[in-house]
Image (tube, rainbow, N blue to C red; front, side, top):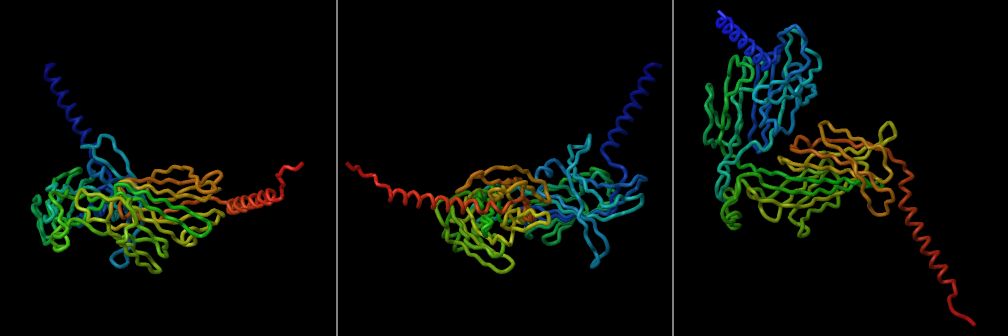
Length: 466
């Protein structure tokens, strides 16, 4: 009898544990009626476009929608953006939404989350459509890891045929866009089909929360894997009329490493078949009306660059001293000046603010570590920064010619920077115009003292007389 009661206790306790585990791993309240995902693998930066039609199925209003990521994806996330859509087709409009990382207790398989805050909470039975973009860097794995000069570059991409989500998904489909028709292999998760350079997975019906169907795609991608390991940009403001910008680059090709001997004759005679995954030039989009542009490295000035300017933008085409194959690196410096009135403005409160671009000017380039230093004029006070994504901020002091108290330097740091981070940011500060007279007065005083000293010296008789 006691044994039977103990067995019943163990049975009901196990049911309780299972119920508790299942309830903690799924989130009640929302379900996804339709999900469509497009994965763009045309470059070495993975861009995922996600459309979700979300419905609230419970009485309590829902104010947030969670996005789920595997720990590997979370570590390679560069940017997550979301917007809510209103209207249809040509009359469709988008309203940006706040997106922030969040945590849930007892998340299965160490799943990581981002929370999307809705403009208006969803009542029971209401639906809304979300447009989401997230960017992954360093997510394509070259295989083979080493290739010769004449070989094409093949890469692996790992993902899931179904969307990882804490909600029940009634219907979903995934389209993977690859840069060419050359696909070595891809995982079949029926229904799955290939059409040219597109792979389509789905549609899949009624998938439970945290469903996963791993896939591996092995394909050709000869797009140059341009990665700036470290970029340090210094923006120095002078109220006398210019903004001087200096950028220090440590550039690398993060693709399959080059093996064997490099033949420049073969590289130049067969440009379409030799070194197809290397790059020999980069295009930087600079602000309009730039002047005093230079491009140099540790050896000296590099003359292989071309600058095109117009009223809207300036384009600087640079060529390193040698083509960059996989695993090769180069360091160089780019500098230029722009008119002060194009980037420095006065706010309504009487303060001043600098409006400048944050990210890297090179297209399709990942920056592992970006440091932006804004050097304010001497005498500036109360600096503050406005930027639309999280960055690390700090203040330093820099001394230059004729400085007395030093110049305040606003330092912004961010890792894993994608081209989508190249958006304007603002640095606000207060400045008393009387400080503009400090250096001229110092020079005038120095010359005045010099001439007075010379005059006194010439009129003093230092000879010895009896």
